[in-house]
Length: 291
Image 1: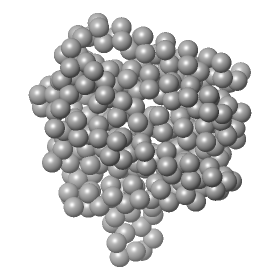
Image 2: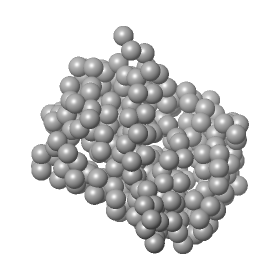
Image 3: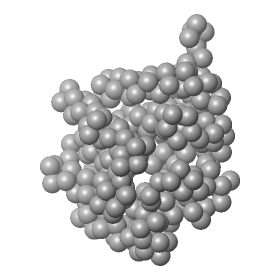
Image 4: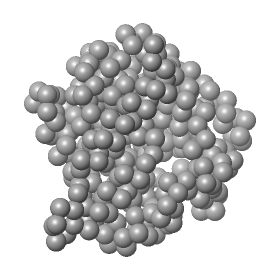
């Protein structure tokens, strides 16, 4: 039987190979835009979102090739959000994944435009995904829009940048929007590609919500305890910016307990799926990550 890491690496490499086919300059007079898009898109990373889309599709008996363009569309959304998140008007970060952020490498104006273009191209990928019915493509576009729009990831970013969250419930809401919305979309896109039932989609959404909270709580912990070279971005930036985090409210031990609780709930949500082993191990793997 294929082990967890082997399966994860296979999913990730399929996503990487697909992403590498996108956005080559091709002699265009505006080719530097494609360079900036590719610079951030191909900078590495865990590719959790496309991996999750592929995994949910297979867990429900679908053909993962059908989920690949959908999962990669979501990775474009995620990358655009990181480019904008790093800008001086937002978090003002100089490093992302161990190298200069997009605006440091290409300038602020081109970084903004690269993010804008990645968002638009994400919807083109979903709307033109081969092998899916018109209804599935429409459903996928709607899932993307809901996840990244004014009541999704962008809303979470507003709560974060404007520091509108300080208590536990407020931080949970921020996490559910800023982090959980795209993870929920990944699960939904995998379900769409597999023609999942409404009940299966409901359980997939529950899984994504739980791992989203666990992921953010672990991220807050890593901002305190991680090695910067391993983490790939500045450590301690949240505290330096005066942001309230789960560590401030719960302490490191309390955060570890909450991560364990949410991980167990995520695993329970998908335990009845036909092929749930990878999703069960993925939840545990994310809970213990160091970067």
